[in-house]
Image (cartoon, rainbow, N blue to C red):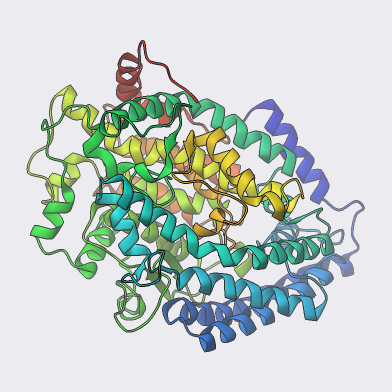
Length: 600
């Protein structure tokens, strides 16, 4: 840990420690309150999860109303618990009670106002925003074309090369967010009121307070991590833009940016779907896992079984039978659902499920490993009190499955029959690394800017009058991408990304993209692997599984630097493993970009 961060953790400990020695009676009362709150919230959370599961997998006005009422009830219970907890903060004598009280205070991404009427309004708006996203579809500019939902529009972005069709799909989906603007602005007002009620300046400050350091220090920490990986992203951007300029020579902007609809993803957050356009050495290795999945008739259940088998090979338990009975693995034909992949422990006692519209693609296979990573984290810590049933920080939760997915190497894919042979020369290695970088590295600036925008919105630096302008300013600044068609404040492009109307903090994904490589290196070391980090797969290694489980079972019971140390031996997030993993590609990109005008 750096001296700076060590000081910050000391400051946090002093801030959360009792100012005076509590009396025995006061300390006992604080512990009793924590115990009671854990028991009551477990019931409330389970009720809300059940309602939200139904609302996400069967979208109707009725299910949205039920979800809103359940959310309002949970908000009321949390408001009461938070109000009472403030009276016990200085009385908690033991470390466990003090940590539980702190976690309670920072537990809600959507803090509710004390006023019952405004709390009800917030719950209703949150449910309506989620439903608006879930029901979104594009029916053409004249409303007469065949209506297409997000999965169909995503396939266009992933497979189409014709400029006009890409623009249509991109602009069509983004149009579904326009009605959200008013609701979102009101949600910000109400969430900020709820945050102020529990001692924060705004909801953004609350979000940044959940990382065992001050909000200001956390913002500085994310910037430190970004600056460490930015040179690799810049090199990748320069190379990709050069290749796309060959495909669209008269269309590329002169300012050095890349139009967002050309990167194979609705939000330009990753660009692995355009791999064939930027492949370093075409034809040197067959990396078409999609074709193998289709040829071998991998359906959603078979794909999920393959992902589960990886975790079981590490010595972890199989998923419960109820998982297979209650999960949503594909889009139903008879109703609207939220297809965005998510993992659930509905009762916080092992009712594990996923909700996902699984396709026979490598992208879906990797996503399944990601979602099952959540489930195995849930399973490891479900013996803990409810306030400790979370990741060491939210980036940990997102990183677990992604770290496992780094072991989906060509050698592993060959072992499970999805590749015919393992590439052996440097050209083939660079192809593999490029494909990975188009997902892992391309995502980094997007992962950071989502919450950068929301922090500024919550703080009032960005107002409803310039939501969209601020959004595209950040996308240009961090990603070097631009809108494919003219945008204005008549649009609300942030709302076209699930996590904005869903009110899901996003910095966890940025942290996870860095942590996963640090986790991967530690697990490879535990497995005794010798060789380049990018070649390591821990598949079948029980020693690595034991190391992983030792961290998972801690949940949020200890500050994240302690959990990180259990797995990696370090108490600081370290991007060096990511840079080590991509060292061959970094060297090659630097050569390819010599003499080019890079940047934007």
